[in-house]
Image (cartoon, rainbow, N blue to C red):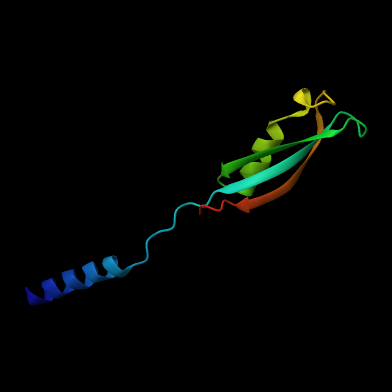
Length: 89
């Protein structure tokens, strides 16, 4: 019985002193769409709360800002400008 009590106390101690699990990290990112031809101009899209930089790039690339930009048209290219961890993490 004493041995079981000691094991229970040891397990409780391990769980009590174990570091808390970190919250999943989120990222902020920005990307530039090239609108139409090389002379068509460009526009920038930004966002935050992405789970990783690959998701950020895919989502921002899908957010074509060219139709609402002064150059109009559709995106003919996309470049991820930056992807950094959110400050709140």
